[in-house]
Structure formats: structure tokens, C-alpha cells
Length: 277
Image (cartoon, rainbow, N blue to C red):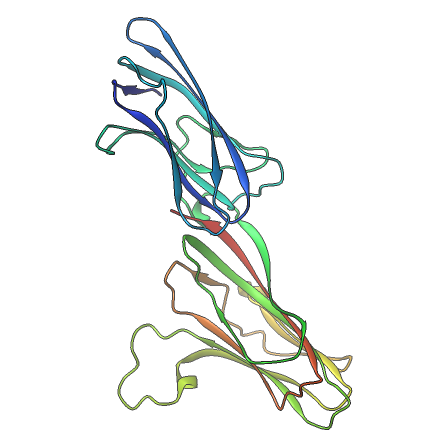
């Protein structure tokens, strides 16, 4: 594969990431008159999933010719799904003349000329992510917004750990998965009526501890409730995994009823993520 260029064109690398990644770019080519082109540059991927780009213009494409090889290499420690890049030749009006490569850059895999992998789960695994919504803090209701900018996610479950203080109260861990596909009708006043999945429990009294663990992985999905070291397997007829694109309205609402300020809890969600642009 090769991509032609003319004077005034430039190389543009565009992408997004969810972790720091200093990328190395190498482009080689030949001019129509037989001369050789060798370009080395860098691009720092964003860490907040926002899209960014770097244009390489200095001493590039001084005469007509062809790009014959290109590669984008990332640092060690980057997993598939964390950094997605497109490498293009664009003209002076920013129109794409030719796409050199598009795909994920990760440890053990550089992005070479001619590779064109669409972002998302179709091309392979993403980065398995455990996101802490709460870590050893006093309990409050927490709403998790499942979608993220420039990301595709597969929600795989969550774990909620609760330690009740010696204060008298009956605490119940309640979770609602809510996914309203559009505005609710007039008179639809009960927000919970738009829930698609709910989990209740365990129920804890003073000085008890417990866990609500939910696995959302198709035929092996289940709910497990640990009530002060007594484990009860809940429903196995659990929907999931949930596929979540950018702009998906899904939220998960975690509400500890009768929570005491002296209680402590930790809450984590598990999902697989692919950066997309």
C-alpha cells in the first residue's frame, strides 16, 4: 500500500486515550524524482478520552511523491482499547488525501501502514477497567453515568461493600439500573418505573457487614448477596452484559437506605472499554 502526496500536504495524527501515552511516529516515502523522505515525530495522546491531533508540516512533502511505510508506536504498559489513533495525509484545506492507518496502539502492537481497524469491540478485546465510585467513605447515594465521551463500554457488573456501625438501624443496599430511551410521558412521575433491573440487599443491622456482588456476563450472570458472612445466591436470570455507546442514557443508582454517618462503604463497577473517535 502507498499514499501519494504533493507539496503543501501534511501528516496528521488524530486520536484519543484514557491514559498517558507518548507516541512515536515514523513515516517514510520517496519523491517522484527518486529522492527519499524520512519523517520522525511525536504525539501525546490525551488522558481524558478527548480527541486531539498533531500536524507534521516542517520539511515534509516538499515535492510530489508516495508514502511507502508508516508506523505509530506507543510506550510499554498500554493495553488494547486505551489509545485509538488515525494517521492521515491531508491537503492544505484539511481534506484527507489518504488514510495511512487507523487502529489501537498498545504494548506489543504498533500501528502500521495499511492497518484499518474500526474502533469498538468488533476487532478484539478492550481494556478491563475497575472504576471506584466510593472507597472507604461514609455512605451516600451514588449515581453512575455509564456512558463516556469517545468510548464504547461493556458493563460487566459491580461490587458494593458495606460496613454498618454500632448505631441501631436497618440498612438495605438498593441498586437500580435505569435506561430511559427518550422523554417519559406526562404523568410518569415515578422515576423508578423506568428501571430495567433492580437489586435489593443485603439487609444489615448494627455492626454487620455485607456485600452486593453482581456479575453481568450473559449465561453466567448472577447476583450474590453476602449478609454478615452468610452468602445467598440471588437470581441468575440477570440481563447483561450491557453495551454502552457514547450518549447512552443508562445510569445505575446505588442507594443505601437508613445509612448512618458512622457507616463506611466502598463501591466499584467493572466494565470493558474501547476508545473510539
